[in-house]
Image (cartoon, rainbow, N blue to C red; front, top):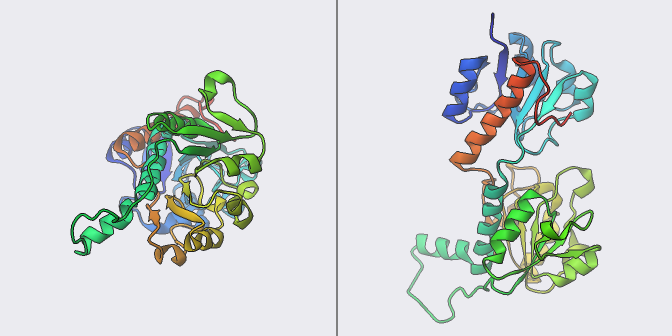
Length: 325
């Protein structure tokens, strides 16, 4: 029996491509060519090969036009990500195309990234690293690059899901006080002593650091704007490893320039891979290239989870374990 044809839009870890090639007639993207950002190109390639499934990733353009143009042979789209806001779910449902994602394997690694950014911003690590590399360091000095300690600070976690709770567990080891804002108060055994705020004014006014872990989409677009930044304490720190669209860049840049916000650490950007050039002029912002889940262990786990979902639909003809549509 012929293997199902699987279109893979991005270069994936070797172990994942090997498994895909073993179980499918896999059409890979070995050079990671950028065609996956063009929905029309994804559809064209799927039509050319008669794909049964598509293994895509965050950043792929599965908009309504792309999904409408897919061949009838496509039964499932698997995204190599937890987020699926790059896929038009309504369009997929209209075509009876199953959509699956890769949850529950990257929470700790993404929380690690958020904590890395928090430390970098608080301790001015990016500035110091740039100073050493530029040959400008003249030796230790009592007032050189003084940052702030995390000990005793009030960490505000916006979105107390899996990643937010992993971050809280790490922060407790630094003797930080945990505050959170979510759609509802969670049970005490989940909170583990974290303080719930039922309104944003109370939340923003109480914290020294905000770490953002909210999903994308219009509901959270530019959530962190000038009005909300102004509700934060002078000298606060902003960390975002969630979704780039949740921060209004010009507002944060202005707050960083004025000093109202002491520092920021960003791993995601509105319109990435483009980065607002205003950030590049600032010393008090640490910038990472979307490294949240970028560990060998996690990327292999994500790939295997995606393939488990594809196996369920295309080989076992059963319900996939991580269906989002």
